[in-house]
Image (cartoon, rainbow, N blue to C red; front, side):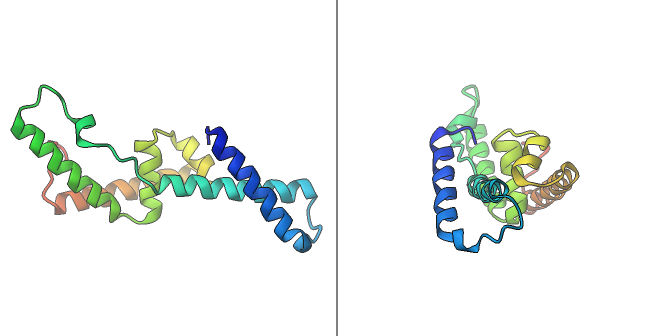
Length: 146
């Protein structure tokens, strides 16, 4: 979360949640720990919401100006198939593909953002890529040549 406005929103949401639920505080942990846990959960929710919204690259940003018309049309078709295939992934797989490939996060950053271990992230990536490959092959895309 490198966005100042988003950070302020998370902070505001955190304090609103604290105000609404102050009567539920049992004292099992310190107030600071309780506040940090609520803030962390609010921040994770924002990251997850954002990571489920795939970056919408338009075909024009992915096309090479030197491509001929046939190549351009083929790439546009493949981009459409890829978008549809991504929507067929499970939310966790779509989330990890989005973080790693579209938002260019490292596996360490993704692990931190999602509150998961690096091995979990790598396993999700493996299965997400495998499923995406199956979907693309099923749609008739030879992904090694595209």
